[in-house]
Image 1 (cartoon, helix red, strand yellow):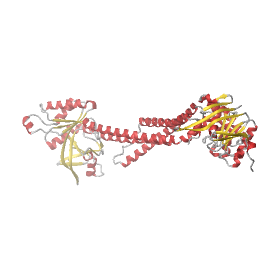
Image 2 (image 1 turned 90 degrees about the vertical axis):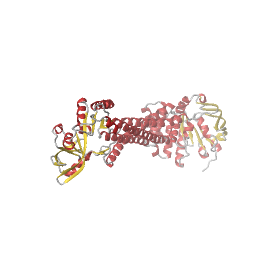
Image 3 (image 1 turned 135 degrees about the vertical axis):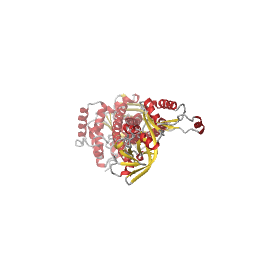
Image 4 (image 1 turned 30 degrees about the horizontal axis):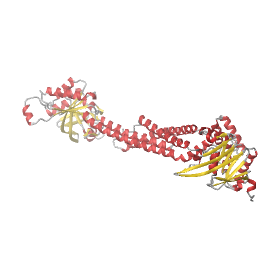
Length: 383
Length: 233
C-alpha cells in the first residue's frame, strides 16, 4: 500500500510542480502584453534616400491616427522617446522620457497604481501631465505621495497625475523606470515635428495577426507615397519561439512523469512481489482445504484492487498536499515568484491513479495466478 | 476400505535425471484405523502423504479413496475431495496469520459453501471441542504453538472428513504440548476417526495401532505398533 501511495503522490506532485512552472512562464509572458505588432521606420540606404527624395517617408503621428481611424478594432499607441532631466525640488533624475497615447496602458497591460494614466483630453490640450514609474516616483518623492506635485522637465512645468504599478523588468525593459507624458505634448514642446519613433498595436484576435500586419504594411506604404520604409514585427513570431520553449518544457514534463510513473510502478511491484513466498504458501493451504482456482483468483483480485484503490486515493491526497506545499515554498524562495503555484491537473491524477491501480492489481494477481497453477503440495512447501 | 494404493510410483524430474520418490507402494487402510508412517527424512513419507492427501498425483498406479478412483479425476474434483474427505494437519500449522482462530476454522466450511451462520456455529463448536472456547477471536500469532495446532485440528475436522492426515503434528511443539496433541489424536481415534500420521519419532508412532516403515521410497515394514516398538520410560 505504501508503494502505491508513494507512486501516485510522486507523479501528481512532480507533474503539478512542472505544470506550475509552465503556467508561471506563460503568465510572465502575458504580463508583457499579448497580440502585439511593433511598427517602426526602416533606415533607408543612401541610394534609397536619393531615390525617394521629396516623398513623405517618415513615420508620423498622423500615421498612427490614420491607422486608428481605418482599423477601429485595433489599439494604437504611437511612441516617441526623449532624453531629459526631471527636477522636483532638490531632487532630480536624468533618463528616458516616453511620449505616448492613452492606449499604451491597456496595450502593455501596465496600469497606474495611484492617480490616472494619460487621457484623450491630455492629448488634445497638450497638457503637461506626467506619469512616473514606480521607482522614479521613489527617487523624486521618496515615500511621499507624488500625485499633484510639480516636476520640471527642461523649462516646462509638469504635474504628476499618476504613478504606475510596479511591474519590474521584462526582456530588458524596466517598466518601473519609465517617465510617461502625452505624445502631443512631447511633440509640441520638445520635438517641434510630428515624427514618431514607433508604434505598438494591439490586435484583438491572435488568429488575424499576420493578415492585419500585411494590411497595415500596405496601408502605410500607400500613405508614404509608395515608399516601403516600414517594418512591422509580429509578436506572434516571438511567441512562436516561446511556444517552442513551452514544447520543450512539455517534453521534459512528459519525461519526468514517465520516470515518476516507472519509479512508482517499480515500488508497487516490489511490495506486491515481496509477499509472494508467504502468499504462495497461503494459496497452497487454501487449495489443500478446498479452495478452487477461481476462489483464489477472485480473492486476490478483490484484495489487490482494494489495496490499490485505497492506496491510490491516499496517494492523490498526499500528492496534492505535497504539490501545494512545495509550490508555496518555491513561491516564497523565488524573487518575483509571488504568483507561482503548483497546478494540479485532473489528467495527471487520472493517469497516476490508473497506472498505480493497474500495476497494483497486475502484480497482485500475477503471482496468485502462477501459484494457483502449482500442485498444492508444491505451493505449501514453497521456499 | 477407506484407502487403497495399488502399485503407486512417484518420480520427480530433476533436470534430465529421474528421481524416484516412491516405488511400487501397495497399501490399504480401513476405516477407523490409526496408522503411523515412519521413516528417515528422504524416505518418501512426505511424498506418500501428498499423494494420499490428493495434494499431488502419482506418476503411475491406482489410488482409491472412499470409493473414488481419485488419480483419474480432474483437479476441480480433487479440490472437492480434499475439502470434504480429508482433514490436513501440518507440522508448521499453516494457519492464516491475519485471521482469527474462528475465521481459520471457518475456511473449509466457506469453501464447502456453508452459510456464514452455519460456518460460525460449526467453527465455534469445533474450537470448544479442542479446548479453545475462550480463544475464538485471537489471531493465530497470539496463540501458543500447542494452541495453534489445536486450531489446525479443529479446521481439519470442519467438514467431518472420513480421513485425518497429519504430517509431523508435534514436530514444532514442546513435549507437553506434543503430549496434549497426541492425547487429542487418541481421543479422536477412539471416536472412530481414521488417522494417518507421519512421524520420524518411534515414541510417537507407538501411540498408533499400526506402523508402516518407509525406506528409500519402499514400504519395508507394516506391523502392529505395540509389537514392534519397545516401550521406553
